[in-house]
Length: 404
Image (tube, rainbow, N blue to C red; front, top):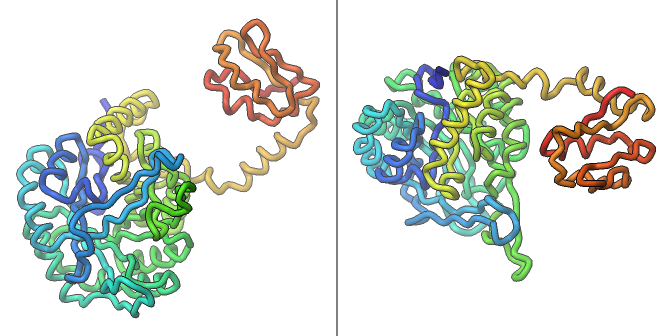
């Protein structure tokens, strides 16, 4: 029997799968469904720090399937909860969370006044007293932890975001450190650059135990029939973020001693395992629940437990950071490079006829080294360049490059 429980910032969770802040955690009813379907923790939709933050009365989300980006998402869910709404979500959800051993995380969002039109005015971090008051209100309503999202949002030009975040982090820590009974951490968008590594060091220096690194990359998708994007601002989310978010998690893990919650591109149990192996303690998700429904939590937990049993992992924490030594490893890269640049005659492409299903995918070979004959691939090793493409796309693992 595997143990899915895990500790994060001094908080014990029954499993490492977290419902991230967003539409799926914006009402008591949606929070209830996250808990009932097994989420280890639910991050309630963020509270705005001033009235100007209440941009939209309802969610606005557009999946991009019709534009050819299945599961891709552009969103305009910028309407934040009021402190009173968040307190209601927490207090109403508290009894169920206790029964199901789930954790509730309150969320605060730094975002300057919304003018609606550029040029955007300079934005300063909120007053510590305001931040402290709202965090204490959430704690009193039943939050097990507080997450503070330091990000530029829509209220400033991109060139100002780095300065804003760097000024906001010390303000948040100073305002809350030693004032709460529950743990708190910073949620940090990495804004398509590496400046967040500096922010991680600042957080560590100021005594933070953990950080939430999430995907804030900008992306644009177009409806070519109209020559317009679904949204006129490049906010792109979805499964395609998996690779960048994996790498951001790795960079965060190896450049700090902070525990990491990571979100962005986590849609399946394999994605969650992958993110944890890159260095994340917790894997948070939101958009796949909108796409597939709340059953996603159960599917991920079932797959995660099955994988751990098959591989012999006793605890969820056993997987954290396993891949980190291999992600940016020049020695391993050079060894693989030497293998692929050796003489063609030293290796050959071989077929395991027992494993082969005859699907024919390998005949896409650009060197025309594979053709189908009597339902099986026929290999011409004179034409084969040993590039490895067929080996990697074979769904049955029936092809291999081996010594001649």
